[in-house]
Length: 216
Ligand code: AP5
Image (cartoon, rainbow, N blue to C red; front, side, top):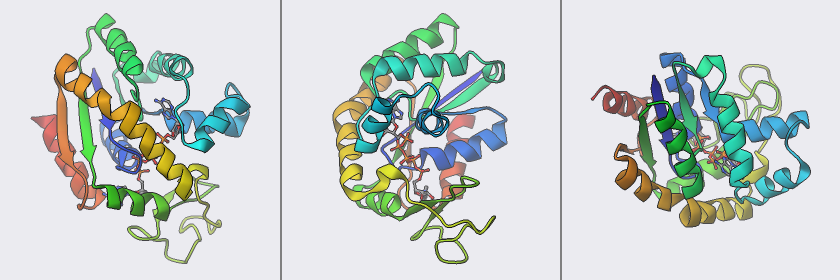
């Protein structure tokens, strides 16, 4: 059973690395942000108040997120393991996850993706996504072949609702105030946090560092 937690600030590359890891390890990618956005798209299970919280760059309530994650981890495809992206993000969520894992005799590995502040801003302001197929681009680091159009289906690329400057600032504040303290808890109470410098290397090199850390 592999329980991998990708931990890091907005824009640190959690989603990018989770995709590489899940493709290679054959484990499901459990992204709370993606689950919440999918809920909004479908209009199912996520109400307007949750959408407003996300669009403002604040954190959704622990109860909503914990219930969603617990349901997801209980599905058959997660029986051999999973890669968590964006969860836990508060001390309450971290304790909730610890209880869930301990109840099943599972120990998680936490990968902390450490990225410089200025690089985070460049990544988030430059991110573009294809609204049809979901492919992610970055105008600075991974641009599409034709400006603002998806390489795969030619669809016009979109900016994520919460990637606007004022909202990015709020997301980073939420990270500093509510999420960064979770790292200390994970280090002291759980004891398995691997530090990965994810600032300057391209995604493939960061991925190699993560694989190396997991093998050790
Ligand atoms: P969520 O979707 O989890 O967003 P986030 O944590 O802000 O993270 P991002 O998706 O912005 O960044 P990432 O670290 O995944 O980086 P990525 O790989 O995309 O959450 C959104 C919202 O949902 C929250 O604000 C909150 O409201 C709510 N929410 C979610 N989980 C919650 C929870 N547990 N509790 C409460 N509320 C919750 O990369 C970013 C960009 O950088 C991309 O353009 C990418 O191409 C580029 N890039 C990545 N790696 C590299 C690299 N090595 N070099 C160059 N460019 C790179």
